[in-house]
Length: 607
Image (cartoon, rainbow, N blue to C red; front, side, top):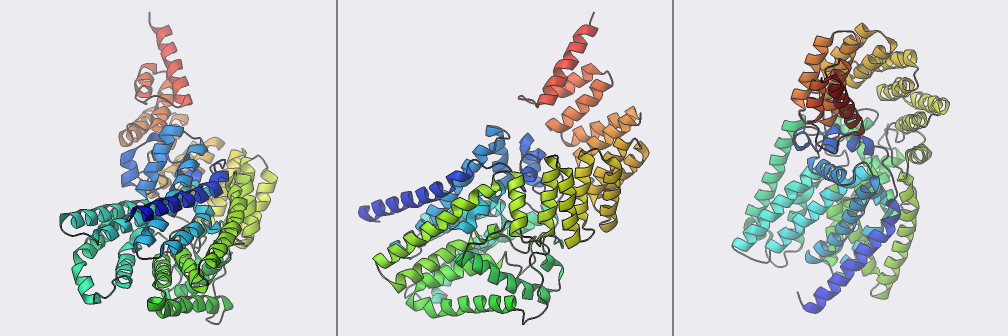
């Protein structure tokens, strides 16, 4: 690359990064909201920095629940936690930095893929500012999207770099692409679209080289990427026991439908996604049941609109393949990366999520920039992009603070998605945590009116009632949740805790044993069982249960603190000190205080 071109590209990269950072700087004051506590502060593996658990158990809870496995993302949370503790600021700084990096990669990679420099620059600026990215950037758990996209584009860059050399250097770059591709998959599974994207991009940019010759020449590299994808799928299945997430009606009404009906519904949702990309004025953090009613007919206007979008993208991509190859490349990158998160091919965990557009939107921005460039050269493109970036940026700046704190977030969620049972249930939980139980009960009632006897909503209501000390009502609510979902392990676990608080240790142990049958690998459930056994006077059984929990998590501060508390209460301060000293400093406040008290009692007891 000529020095002048290199300087120009560096200048463009700086501008794109500054746009991304400037527009998301007001997200740095956001807290942990929505899924953040489950993924970070409530994830014992993150808090303890337990690498083995992060790598070998489903994300986010780290105790065997769930069908999500994103160990690289979770590992970055653990590293952040080790550096900043539970302070959200540092986590948000990392997210903003990652978004700036991905925005720059959009510029660099597409320019290297043959897109004109001005078009790649415009696309990167549009990507950096697009409001549909606020969920991925301003909410910490959106980091999965950011890391996956970064790995995706870095791997593609290595692949493109391998195409301009030969011999060992090319082999090394392909190996680098394969490694980065694997890391992207460990961040989030949607990066698996990379092999299809590089094949399509290679064919579009092959020049006069025959397609068959190109495919034969680059076949070893393609096979390496496919091998990485297959290896990841096998590894994921080993860890979580499934290739795709388990669909639930509350999160994804399409996931439980026969394939044909699911595809029809996914076509309708594709039209909504297109609207969010083209006209991102109305945004929402939740689209779950029943915000998007399932279409009942092929003639549903939403289905027809979605079909028009899909057909239109295909037709324009085919028409532009020789006239405007950058437009075709952008549309195909958008389509290939979107297809995997659309419910069109396989059901996923959610019916719709704006965060899922993070990677596909890069292709959209390239297509949009290419279209604008074709419509008017020079200043016309510049003016159009500046206007769009200003409009996008204003919406982004206004949207970022939605993730500031739970009550603001969930109140906004219900306003944006008034038909969503989950939105009202989550608002109810936030209100209860703020001590506004009457308003919380009204929110739970609205959620249950949308989806009667929903087990998750009932579970959340039970948590709120238990925290308020209404143990009888909480127990009744958990039993309703269990009636709706007989294998609801967490409901059994919480029911056990409530029954213990009511003084019925026999009923508590029965519920906890059932929870143990459903989630046998959870050491934290063993902690609860041990505490209930101790309250029931079965101290020998309690000690054995705590020792089992410690054997499973020998370095976990929560497990060690619970066992140390039990030993201290039993008067066995020597054993309590030995257990609590196993917690690496800095120790949690409760563990540190308990250790100090046990040591003082030992000193007083020593002649």
